[in-house]
Length: 191
Image (tube, rainbow, N blue to C red; front, side):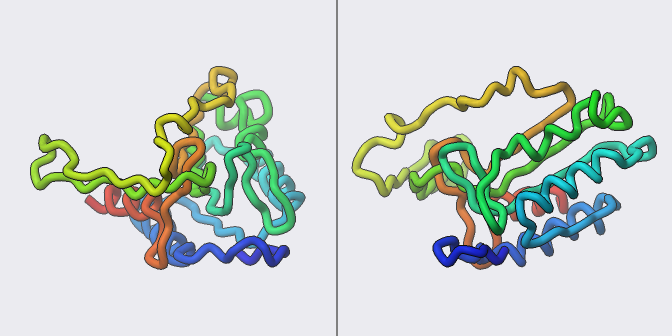
């Protein structure tokens, strides 16, 4: 994604994630796959509204994947400005998109949700072994910074799944080979 302000970094590894998502959904699962890049907030709104007017009678579900920058205030980034992530699902409720009623709507967000680093844990060779080391970049305990999700997911309409690359307050891990969130899902679909 190419952001209009010079303060927002290019998302290295996104190209690899796109290849993996296309292979997972289009090639392996035979989904109809549409890629949209470098959209403004208005273009995102327009595209989602147009999509919600489509007839989904012959479709089993709807999958939306957003890969962009995010922050700990619940906002995600378009090329021109931040927007609330609820924009991704508000057009697809049973009332606004009746042809999806009773069908899963899966929304995946490959975005950061804060600025706490998580270096992960080295796992033992046996899955029953406890982690041998857990590193933490911050001098304060991450546990004290962890907060439960503030969003009212109890009010999220039925048949929705919203999957995040990380928990609130943390960076999402992404390197030049792609994001861990997308790449692990891609490998799990191949198995």
